[in-house]
Image (cartoon, rainbow, N blue to C red; front, side, top):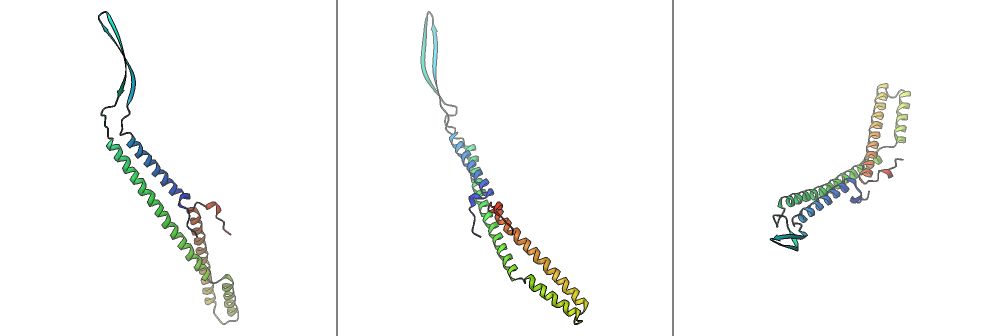
Length: 184
């Protein structure tokens, strides 16, 4: 199975979105460290005895303190960004390891199924055992034991086939291609 593009995997997309959000919050905290100046027009009316004066001008104001470094919020945002980066890398690695394990399991399951005897071989051995029983060569206890072994083998082979299909289905799920999974 060829490796999948990590950008199409839902957990990786979620971790990447959280990383981008943390980066944006870190940038916002840095931007809030610089105070926003306010520019306004000022009109002052002065009355001094019989005379009245009107003064017009412009005013610039800054919030106090003028140099607000916003250290706490910037450190918190930076820590959240670092945490999101670590989580993003962890999710990518975990996905890669899980997928590698599933592919290895699937490959081993397929190899085991290819090495196991076919149904035709099992059926021919079953028929030869029964013909020996009918001719009186082997006892009924041996025939019962042979049937039990055939049943055990068939059950374990069916379980292996089920595990193989489940491993393949999980690979498709991790790759985000579960809709393309077909069991035939």
